[in-house]
Length: 404
Image (cartoon, helix red, strand yellow):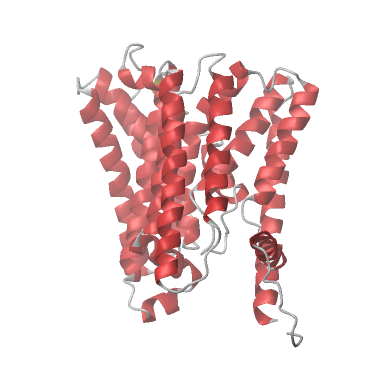
């Protein structure tokens, strides 16, 4: 500094802006492109059809996101390892078939039918993990074979009729179609969520102070939590003008939060990112790589089964088409569009929520405009391609920034 003239330390605002600029120039875009894209999509569809952002349509949109979004969470996990699971659609269809047959033909209690369906999904994932770690067969091939095998098993379970209607008064059907939170409970959950976000940030800040690491202002964390609360309250108030917030959508969001906490706050989560970043480095660090692979494949298939149960409840049926069509493609596309890297090691559980919101918004908006499904496939394919291009450019930018 100049003799006799004290320097002024940079403000926390300028420091935060400098950090943000460094992240952007380093290719760390986070969820920004997805959020901007979602805003643009909503703006375009609202301009073309004023009913798109109506409370009634947004309630439908949230319910449409839950089933495939749950499957997409599992896809996020396998993509973090640089792997893929092409059979999630078939696994979800098998779970729906087990639920339908168990309830209507075998006389099982709902809890038993759900448990068997979920355990079947977990067993399939365990088989995938064992085949991958034992024989080194690429996950693409394993799960492609699984897609065909599980589809055959689904057909076998459904039997000659190929379609089973679930009882209209079954709790899982009511859960997926008719159960909505009362506004006071939705407001309370929003306040709890914002409070937990602030408390978590404050505790993390305290740990960094004790470790002698630089920390940001606590006021920024309070502002972040306050913004989250304001956004949730506004959304709840608007949706409450129609039916309100669906319980199934809340269940989906809770799953996202739980998986996000597991990825960011546990040893297992750090190991997943480490293996996805570099398998050899993770192995040399003492991580049981095989266990990580097996656990992720099990979770992916389990979440696929849960998604299949939600879809069956939403449609009140299990049939040959359960888990078919574009279920696989939408789940994988949602994870990638939401910001999870195809190259492994980068992404979050929130990618599933953001990605499925983009895909279902496109589908919902085009349906309101009475446009052919062919256009939906082309637009979704274009958005997916754009997301992969952004991912590739971001990876290249990060590599160049690291070398500089």
